[in-house]
Image 1: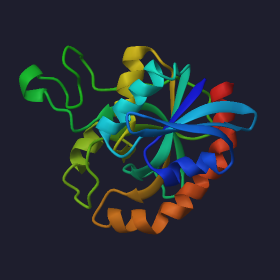
Image 2: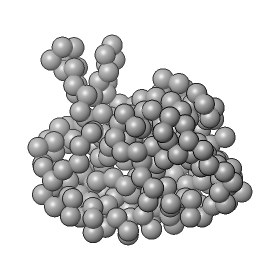
Image 3: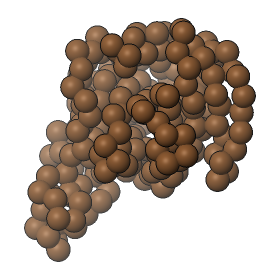
Amino acid sequence: MLTVICAMRNEADALLSQSTIISKEKKFGKEIFYAEAFNHKYALILGGIGKTNAAASAMIAVTFLHAEKILNFGLAGGISEKAKIGDVFYISRAVQYDFDLSEVNHTQIGTLDEYSEPYFYLPKIDSAYPIATLATGDRFTNSTSDLSLLNELNADVRDMEGAAIAHIAQFTKTPLFMYKGISDTVGENSVDQYLANTKKTLEALKNAIPAILGEIYG
């Protein structure tokens, strides 16, 4: 069964609002919905914000829900010029920009111990949505202090969960499909932009759901 992971309820509602909810339960404090949308049954884990919540949710998906595929979608900040507010992107690779063993292993920031590059790769698909590289870290601020690093990693968008889910998916060999809607751009007004554009971007994600499911199921 497809298992969906969303950090926040307003993100999850982009799918749940178009679904028939069959049942609900809680595992390890995470609310799980079992539902059907567009003739596809799925489970959705409401995971919470941040990398630890995201990784825990991915492990629940794999070990307890026996996920055959994982879908993660939600809001993200734009970094590169191609990431415009309201756009939806398919994520082809993800990196943890706050994971740093560079001084110990002399590897690029984001690179796991005993690895040679920082990226987790997602399935290559013929997506209707533009392709992007995602950078994930446990912070969302107006600061531009991370911008040079994000550019060095060739990141187009940033969030607080995606690469942690990709980390688990890679190690458990579970196909992961990830879509991000742009609610803000990195800079001094990021938080204000996020608050102003959340509704618009969530609507774009909601409208994209039928096509997203179509891409996942081929």
